[in-house]
Image (cartoon, rainbow, N blue to C red):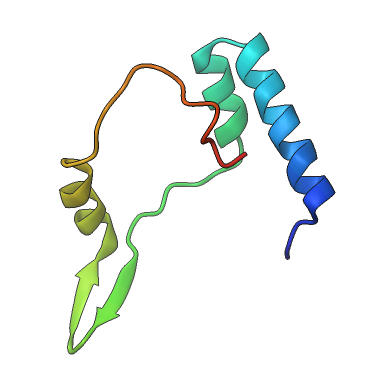
Amino acid sequence: MTLTINQLQFAREAALYVMNTRSMEEALSIFTEGLEPVHSVLKRNGDSMMNLGEEFDREAKYLPTSNSRDIVSAPF
């Protein structure tokens, strides 16, 4: 399902409202409500199978961390 521009704009505005009116913990709870953890995701890589969770963990070590919220570049 593809969202329309109007639906995307509404989602952005709703997310911004939540971020501005709720604590970080409450916002996280709202944004992740109903999600289920991915236990194992495998991707075919040539002849071998690769665990994407382990790949993400390796890559995440190199990502910059920040305690501030980046609202401008948020995808919602």
